[in-house]
Length: 157
Image (tube, rainbow, N blue to C red; front, side):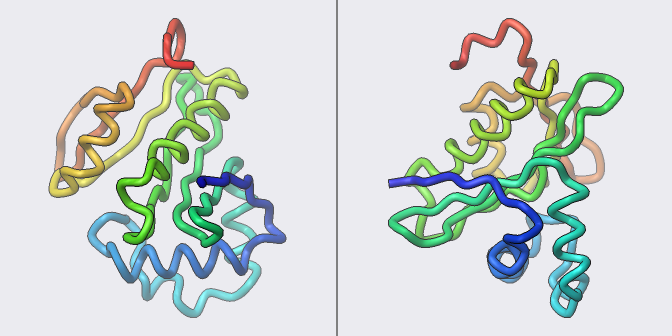
């Protein structure tokens, strides 16, 4: 069973553990490096959960299994999907789909017209997930795919 929970700055320690695990397990999937966060003080962790307005944690079989975030709505009406990761033990169980849909639903709620994301070209599994969820490639530069999903008139509900 997948349970999603929106995080607040008071959840910083739990988010820290999952984020550090993600940076250890899949360093190639993120712009941040483990060394950038490993010794970060509590205020930096809390600040990240405040500065990025939507942060969600997934539990699978009662254990933290994944996370994703949504940026503030920009001037073009776009929310960016950030920091999505699913623990190896929970992959293939629908956790990624649930996290992605949580960000999309949150984006709709704040009036976004689209959700965008960046995924490294080498991360074929993630790109396939995003395509399956209605994202299309907008561009490819420097090894990163820019993908987006238009929300207005979106029939996925």
